[in-house]
Length: 266
Length: 277
Image 1: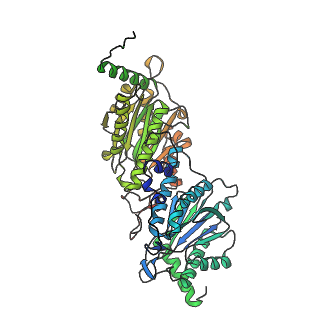
Image 2: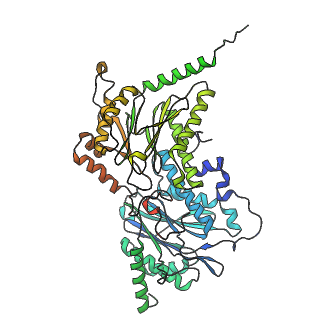
Image 3: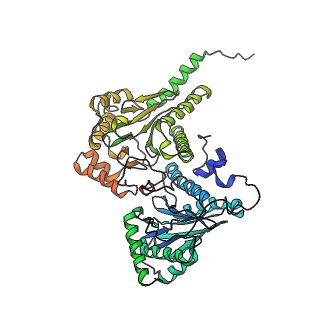
């Protein structure tokens, strides 16, 4: 089964040899299951000059309870792209790991990386595979952003794709947010986003937007100064993906909080 | 009435072995050696796209000689097995030994069951924390596996090449010295009247498993970096080292723990990080 000429796609290979490892291939009993498992909440992504920034809060909720305070919802998909997940946390983490292996697998088998659009399309078809579970309340919605290494204009190489439960992908211009606090994060970004932001400014803007989301959405966690839990902030540039260190994010988050002490509306 | 000729099992196996050995000996050779900074692969290869040396997993590389279609099929199988195990368990549970055993099973089954054996010889190399912990497994056409002591040669006149490696290779060599020894070993055979010859840089496929990197350690050395290493100047080594900084999978500060997932150093566990599963 391993030596078949077959495909370069890892999920297509799994569907032949181990279909039970694909989240969409499991039989679910009828009924709603929305309150069964923790939900991951808000993710924002911003296209900057020469890169993209993605940031996520650290809260997972189950109904009115906080299920986890320090969940990490933003991850590198490969060396040049980032993926953030909102929705049912368990399935989201599984899909994200599968997506990481999918991209690495293609790269190793073919000796070349997928194009950014190719990666987005693969993610879309994986989300589409989860449609049955999504209709029973176990939806997962990712946000995908990365550097298009083939872009003609390096300043516009950072691109963002959003998805719905039936797949997608939809390319977004400038910025996007997903999850329960996305409405407030997007409203904040709408007023503050400017084309051609530097990566550093985009990082600050992302943390501000998450603060605004946490301000109005109970399921989104703000910077937790007492426990020293801060948003996960990652960047993807032509040099690769980078996760800001805890020291860097704490400095930014503390300065955002200090700013809000003066002016709560930002 | 047609007569079925009787051939003894010994005769059949001998014929198959001879076919495979001849096929492997016709090709160009490859050398795999441990050095201070990792594991070095050097293969003589006229093509820059049809690789003899490839990445299997984070710390596992693959080198092969023989028929391209046959070892390419095994390489893909190896990537699939490694990725499937890494996803089912954890990335650090993917080992070179498991892969070498799987290759042995596949090659052994083909050797006994198919009418023609695979004319290939494979090296599965796993880089460890020190040169002493590197493991090099040689998988041959009949399904046998041997654990090689830090250096091996396959294909072509492998015996002669092994002899040179044995007398010149040391596991604590620098990358530059290791490349020189490997190329010297490869070029001892195949010249006019059995004499040594010169192999140009574009005829070599060179790659390493970088011991000090975390996550995916496999890296090809091409172009200026390779020319520099072959010329033996310090600049060449610097270029090869500098290449590490340009590639996106740079190591992060706190070390010695395998990554949890693909692609980048940023995937690695941070202190206090509990959500990586």
